[in-house]
Image (cartoon, rainbow, N blue to C red):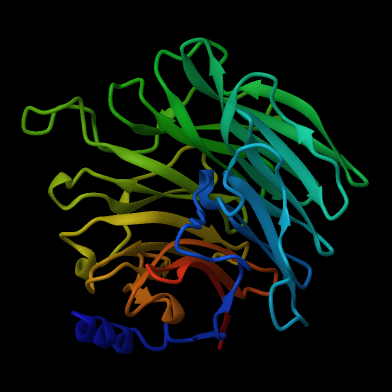
Length: 393
């Protein structure tokens, strides 16, 4: 199968082979058989580039409890700088976004509440008064938003906040639930994106149909009001071979794309015999998402895909990344949108081969370079967070 994948990569020249990759670097300074780093987060926003500096966030248990960390690397540095700890109490699912000029904003769940902080130098801001989890961020120019799943009675619902920044001080400008009524079932794992026209799109996992369906809503007034949510998936609810209320779909991710579009990528189990597949849908700026498209190629059939994410640029470039074990062990794969379809899957060079490489997080910088971080697992030595940069040649 690896020979077939190599042949596929050669046939894709020059469309995919034009990415020229740097040697990989290790991000986390502490590894060990009993240390378990995680790159899981809502919308998978674990890496960002601000000016000439890249930052990666994660959670691990090196101190005996889950804590969140951030490490950065200026372009002139040969390695990542020693990480800083973001949290004091138990911490989960950190995300990071770029503010420009080497500054970042990070957010995370700590002690059952959503928090955020500007780095370097900022104080921690508690975003939510109620119990909250799965916080994520979206920044576009002067617009900055956070979203999270907040307890509202028996179930959680999605809340979106517009944030304001003065110097290093963050504040909450507005904070609104996407739906004002109490949720009838669980909502979680929101993803946010700000389109070129300033509209804010949020998608999330929703259980109102008695199975998990990603729902989408949009605000045109800076997060003050949201339109009634619509299904992101075009697969209708209904039992599969007499089982359940419908096929599952989970972990939606969003990216601003082109002048005013939004792209969504998620994991979808409509082909339930092979596990989750990577699916995508596009909103070109007309108010709703269109038909669903399968992302991975036929070499990824008959096996599950995991940890999918989408990244886009104002120039129309769009890429999806995920991991699967089509070659016997988990590898990180990349597929690029060509304007009509997603192209052939190509393995990220340093994140493939022997061993287990998984959980990719990625971003494009202002120059169009691709930055990817992932987990590289070794049962004896422990898990490293690895990073590589690719330049289009």
